[in-house]
Image 1 (spheres, rainbow over the protein chains, first blue to last red):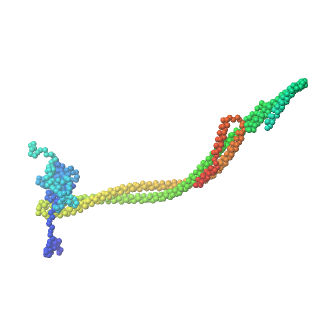
Image 2: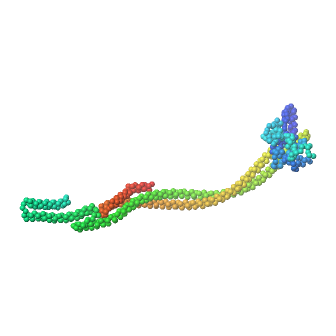
Image 3: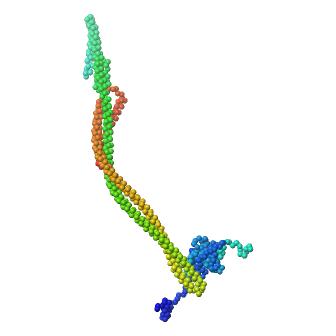
Length: 188
Length: 439
């Protein structure tokens, strides 16, 4: 009767224990940075683990009049409404007439819940933390939301800081109208 | 001497008679003074001078008659002297009764001589003019002969050159005929080649059309493979999304989600490899699709080119047929040119021999003209001498101006005589002409 591979490994371990062979010391776990490699407006970016709520296929949206150009509309999602923003228009600040983006990432922050379209989705990547590059030149439209980046296969991938993006005033107000009344001092 | 003698005797007689008369007068006077005067003595003394005077009167009459006669004789003598000098214009006075008959005869004779000489001079002048014309014609003949000799020499040279050219033309036409024949054979070969090319092009066109159909089918298959690869790539992306969402959910689940985290990472690793291979497959399939499209376009271009080649072959075929017909026509033309060159050479040879004969005849004519010219010169010399002799007979009174004009005319004749062509010059020219002809 043949033995399985796991039984063989167990047998080898027992033999080494019997021979008082010292087990090789395991190297200390290396601190690594884990993120998801995606693309926004054609720019490869890394989103840190835990910052994305989910990646979904871009749902059908209903346009909302009076909103800014980067607001594609609102979609029904998991029993609720999910605003969908165009990553191309938001970052490039100009109209996008290309192919419909297939995927979008869902961002959930206190008071902010929206989906941002992605130009491509790659996968999760893991980098040694010490390999982070902070002084590499990045795309001008992403410079305000960048937190350095990593070199991957010869290309630089910037780390997009979602907190900075959410804190941006542009994203906090989706209305296309100018606010003429001072809060609390309306005519009413 | 005789003149002095003839003239002196009467004078002597006259002087003697005067002396006698003076002696008679002196004797009578002496007798009167010295002797007695008687009748006889007185008659004698008085009659003696009368007789002497009568004798003197008779003598005087005889003397005058003799002088009259002598005058007539002298006039005749003077006229004869002038006649002897050739002056036929002299007229002997016919008033002298003693010599009037002689004078008339002499005048009639001179008149007759003048008429004769005038009758001689007029045709002689015409003859002189004609001889001068003959001399000019002979001189012109010599010049013409010289020009003719030169022309004949040039014509002979040209004919010789023509013979040489005709022979070269014949050689060239033979070579051209040979070349034309070779060209005709090559054209025939080219005609066969175009037929083969046409068949081969039709085969190529059919083969390329078949290949094009296969390439289209291949392109459709590649298109479907591309669609499948893109679908696989989309599935990969979806799996990646699932893996990412699985990791996110596993992290949310904390410790309980750790197995899912491992699964998500494993799926992520697999997806990384699948994604790379899928990307390679898509890239290569797209490359293959592009190559297939290029091949298809190239085949279509090839089919078009083959069709164009077939059209060209048709044109080439018709052109070769035209060239073949043209070569045959050129061969005929070359043959006719060859014949014409042969005839031209023969004609040129005949012309050359004719030119030689003409040259020989021209040399004879030149010799004859030269002889004629020499004869004319000698004749002119003789005529000039005769003219000089005739000119000595003065038949009319000539003024001074007419004499001057006559002298100028004589000088002109002498100058024109110097224009006679010399024999040695003519021979030198003919020898030079012969040398050119031999070259």
